[in-house]
Length: 438
Ligand SMILES: Cc1ncc(COP(=O)(O)O)c(C=O)c1O
Image 1 (cartoon, rainbow, N blue to C red):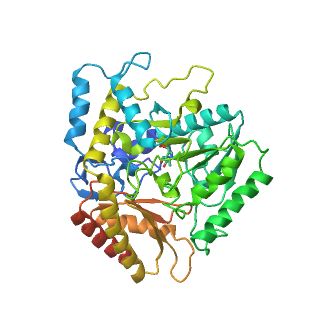
Image 2 (image 1 turned 45 degrees about the vertical axis):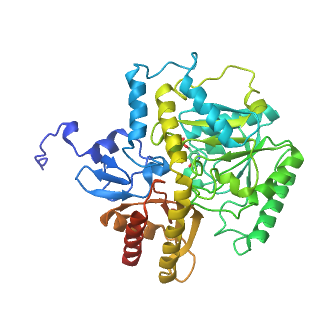
C-alpha cells in the first residue's frame, strides 16, 4: 500500500491550535471545542481571530479587573516606557514600587505593614509560606479543603483540590480543615451559625489530632476561586481566628481573586469576616493584565528572614506604573460600589434562572464573583458535561464565562468591575437561553 499523498506543510502554516498542542504542555487546558485567540479588546468586549466579538465575563481569570484598553493604564505604562527604563532590579530605588507599597500597606489595614512584590499569585503565596514558617519556626500549615493557592511545590502542597494537585511533594506539612465547600460535604445542611460552629470545631479537632501543636499559619481564600466561588458564611474566618490566636498561629488571607473591591461589600474578601489577617497575598487584578503580585504583612513578620531574598522582576517600574494606574481607577470610579450594584442585579437574575431550571443546584458568591453549580436534575449529582455545554452555548451567543469547582461543574462569572447595567441584562439573557438549551 502506498502512503496517501499528504502535502508537506511548514509548521508555521498549520492552524494555531495544532501548533499550540505541539509545543505547549498538555496539562495547560484550553476552553471550547474550537478554542479562540483574542486579538483585540475594548471595555468589556473582546474580539477573536475570526472577527467575532464577545462580552467577557471571565476577564482573563479575574485579571482584567477594569476591562480592556483603559487609557489611564496605557498612558501610565507608555510614559514609563518613554523614560527608556523597563527594568532596573531591586538593587536600586524604584519610586513607583515604594509609592505602590505605601498605598497597599495603608489599604491593607494591617498595622506597621510592609509589602513585597512578586510576578504572580503563586510566588506571593510561596513568599507568605516562607515568612510564616520562618517567623514561627514551624513547617506546619493549615488550609481549607477545596482550596487553590498556586502551582509551585509549596502552593500545590496547600491546595486542597485533586484536579490541581499535580504532585504530593511538599516542603510544608499540611492539615486540611472543613469550611471551604459548603454546598457539599458533611456540614452542608446546616444554617450559617451551625456551619461556623461545626467548621470551627473541626479546626480544633485538626489541631488536636493532625499537628504537632506548633502550627505556623492557616491560609484561606475568603471566597474559593478555582474551587467554584464557594462562599463561607460571613464571620467564619473570624471564628477561626479566635482559635488561631489561642495558639499564636498566623492568619494568611489569599486575596488573589477577592481583592480590590470585587466582592462589592468590601475592599478585601477577608473584611466580611470581621478580622484583620497577619498576612495578605494578592495578584491578578492589581495590574489589570500586567504581571504583578505580592504579599503585605506585619513588619515584624516581613522582616523575619535571615537571608537575602529578591524577585528580579517583582514590582518593576512598568508593572508598578500600571498597577498604580489600576488602583487609582478602581478607587476614583468606586468600582467596589459598582461591583456591589451590578452584582446584586446579576445575582437576582441568576436566582430567577435557577427557579426555572433544575439543572442549577446552587447560585452563590458576592459582588462580581458568582458561581452557578450545575447538577443532574432531580438530585445534586455534579454535572460537569452540562457545564461544558453551557460554555459552548454562551460562546455561540457572544458571551465568555469561566468554569471551575471540585467537579468542574460550576460556571464562574467574574466580569471586569467596570460592568454596566446594559451588559448585565445582555449577559442574563444569554445565560438564560444557554441554560435552557442544555
Ligand atoms: C486564590 C488564588 N491564589 C493563587 C493563585 C495563583 O496565582 P498565579 O496563577 O498568578 O500564580 C490563583 C490563581 O488562579 C488563585 O486563584
